[in-house]
Length: 84
Ligand SMILES: [Zn+2]
Image (cartoon, rainbow, N blue to C red; front, side):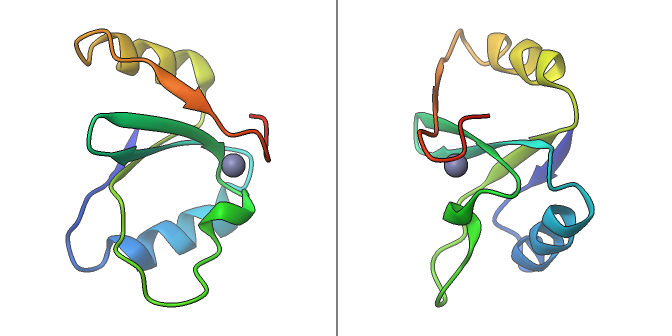
């Protein structure tokens, strides 16, 4: 798992990650709500400077599901555009 938090260079690191791992799974975290995307999803194309939401990236979907289960049984929504 790779953590992208709200530290200063996370946005740049994430852009690099998308290029090198376009098929990986990314959970976008906004407060209590989690949304699953493919790293290549167009939702991650930043058109202008927006607040960077924390993310967790996984190469393997099983690892992602394990991680989510450890987060107080949170669930996640699945992006209807990239349908990971
Ligand atoms: Zn998506």
